[in-house]
Image (cartoon, rainbow, N blue to C red; front, side, top):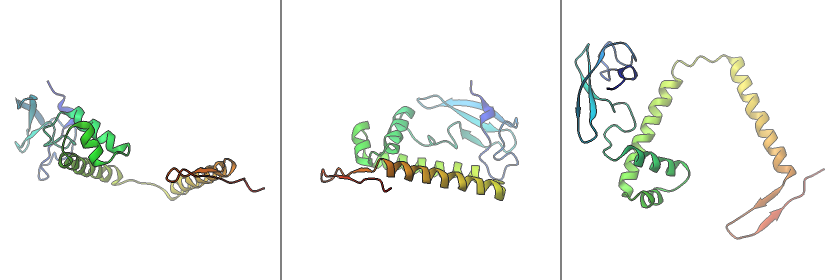
Length: 161
């Protein structure tokens, strides 16, 4: 059976929209090859898949294949290379990337909404970033060896005293 406490009603006009573990979601039936659960809102009677609101909603490929492809993209591989490695078309990879990026945007918007940060906290945050950046610059100056791989040249610079 499925844990319904992690699901909410996706109907924006429902009074339980977006509310997790509110007791209104009940399990319906399973459908498809994967035996995906259909859930029902007890308030508005809307039926929806357990995959609604996830990056896998509407995706018919195996979840691990989608995740591995997205990991390849996150590690810097291109769309064509990721498609070739995973044995799917570039259109498929592009569609998965679009769905995942939209999902990330929605999650980010949700997490950043009503974020109450005081001026002091922001100032401390920027001070931390500036300090980290200056330490990185100092390390770079101490070990000032730059490599350019395009032409195979090596440039070296001595630290200034």
